[in-house]
Length: 421
Ligand SMILES: Cc1cc2nc3c(=O)[nH]c(=O)nc-3n(C[C@H](O)[C@H](O)[C@H](O)COP(=O)(O)OP(=O)(O)OC[C@H]3O[C@@H](n4cnc5c(N)ncnc54)[C@H](O)[C@@H]3O)c2cc1C
Image 1 (cartoon, rainbow, N blue to C red):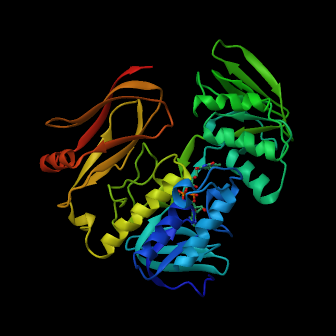
Image 2: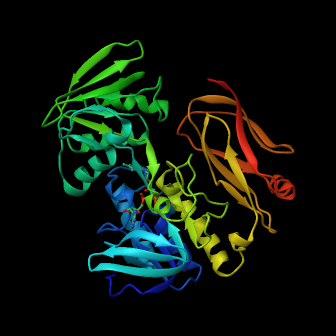
Image 3: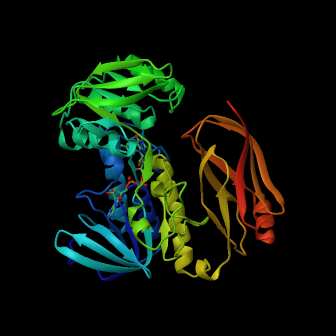
């Protein structure tokens, strides 16, 4: 789709063509919404999985296992088959109240107005600058995402022997990416006592000949032109220097919410994504958000599922079955525990039609204890649970609980009465 082919108005515009955006668009077409356009800043659609040259993707969506690039292609094909318009090389630079988007395209600046706008702009990893690591600025420092793009999209080999910082799922993908490009990482370095991803994955670095160092922190990157080494320090204060020619910063994801931040939408300082209600509606109900822009970080399959659900809520909104949230009262949910990283959604819109509501939270550190949701008049929900950081934790509020919350109409807080692991 070119700029001239872009209409000036449409029913729903979706910003971002990853699994969440494409799922939203495809489902909207299935539900009979006429004009659905996906805007993508890259020259190819498919989002992050395009450069995840490993499996498993697609179980939930296609009931089979794909590698990332094939999975992305399958999602794009399904969207196009359903009649979704995908405009590539189309970056949304800002948006305004009333669904007016300002775009930068290959043909120049343009505008597009939609009845509903969906933010599905995904996440990004924290680069070196945000992690405050000292040293010069030699070549060979990048995130796992940048490495994957270089290896899988451009067939580049940026280094031979890097160190990997972090042990989230994506950190293990970085080892797989290195293996694919015949790069041999020197070590994987984790600040905490155990691997952030499932502990059984710890054998993977070992099998690939990569040392795994826990309780260890990167303090300095050496080298002027190129990386020549790193200094790390462990919990006992012992410093070690590694010779390496690259550093891969992995994980520590943040939602790609700059657009929402620059615009008029309310942002949650804990998730760093836009504040949404249980339907995925932002503080301006012309705008919805879905997928990883809501919070760091979920799998492609989960984001796809969220996209499908968001599409159904958008269809209800277009047919006036959802009350406009400016005319509607809502209950806010605040996190009041340093152990809880965030809660999504951050608001519950008071509706006449009652449904179960699922809240997503994450822990900041390993914890077990009693999770409690209270309002001013007392406890409304509680559950004993244990969890590790960066794992999905779902709190299911039954219709009866939701009804009692709505009847009281009081704001909620979530706490964790915890005994640490
Ligand atoms: C390096 C890395 C590796 C990962 N590996 C895995 C994995 O192995 N398995 C897994 O399940 N998940 C993985 N993830 C998580 C991944 O983000 C999700 O799998 C999934 O891609 C999220 O889907 P999404 O639609 O929310 O966002 P994304 O797939 O990130 O798509 C967002 C899209 O929005 C576009 N966009 C952003 N801003 C604008 C704008 N202003 N205008 C127009 N377009 C815009 C982007 O170009 C992008 O195409 C990984 C993430 C990263 C960063």
